[in-house]
Image 1 (tube, rainbow, N blue to C red):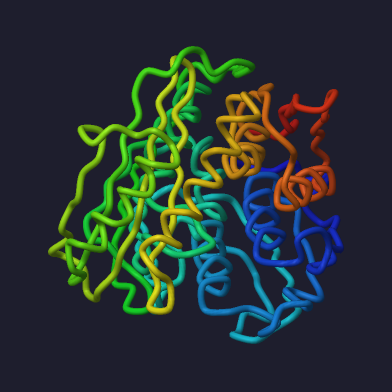
Image 2 (image 1 turned 180 degrees about the vertical axis):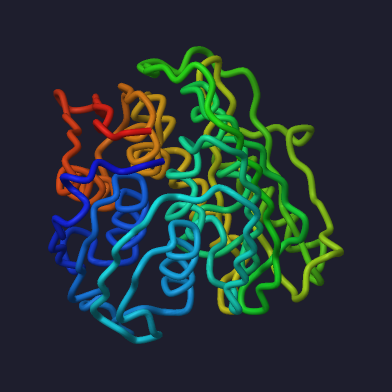
Amino acid sequence: MTKPASIQNAKIEIDGAQGEGGGQVLRSSLALSMATGRPFRMHKIRAGRERPGLMRQHLTCVQAAASICNAKVSGDAVGSQEITFEPGDVRPGQYHFPIGTAGSTTMVLQAILPSLLIAKAPSTITVEGGTHNGMAPPFEFFERALLPLLLRAGAVVRARLERHGFYPAGGGRIIVEVDPPRDIQTIEILDRGNRVSASARALLSRVPGSVGERELAVLQRRLGIEPHECSIRGVENSVGPGNALLLHLEYEHITEVFSSIGERAKTSEAVAEELATEARDYIAHKQPIGPHLADQLMVPLALLAGGTYATGPLTQHARTNIEVIQTFGGRVDVEGEHTVKVHPLSIQR
């Protein structure tokens, strides 16, 4: 992708503490900078967090983005609260990015995948780290909730999980293959349609089976999930122990995935109650797009052909994405209480 020369030198100033004030600002800025060719300087990165500045996961995002578009970067170090990023042209190819910790692999993909969706040649991306983390989308969300919508918009993406990675050991591996897009089109998702199926699964690595049984019992009681819709899977290829509870809700027009991650100080019941509460909120508001999918769709759709979707109340992450997209010359309208309209960015492909 060759960027318009008239905008290449116009550096954008971004406050890293704006909106949700965390890694979302950085990831979206990197993705949009790579695709549009607009350089940026970001200050106050994660300034309000307990450990401000770039952590290993965020640094991997910066370094991975720089590698793919041959960017000039300053401030790329753990703990840095300011970076400058001057992108070159996106170069499709084969890439391997080890995070080195249990940092989220899917969050690294948020920063680097959007620009490759619209590239003119195939790419293969391998990311190693955490695949099932607290406060991050698990692989199943990426594969079964997000990717089908990107495919509907014309992107050509395949993903596979080669090895699970739980906190704190990490060591997971995701491989994503991207081909040039076909028939890019605006998508519209305003209705779920009828529910087709529901399934709940407890993933257990070196954790007693009783943990999964207790988690699934809560989902059966709280959500009306039937016993035949529940399963326990033992994970044998994980580097360390771990537990993830997953719920897939498939409707005619959308599939949503909810998750909760087990931790040492967290009871099985607490893990399941956390998931059940989020799922019940989604079921109650009756809109097709859940809160996490609502914000993760925005940047890819802005780089494809745009789209309109109905969702529940916007999260701070989603509102932050709107601000960042507008900073890079895009436009996202929130119509009424539930409808989001993402306009396509005018970029040279």
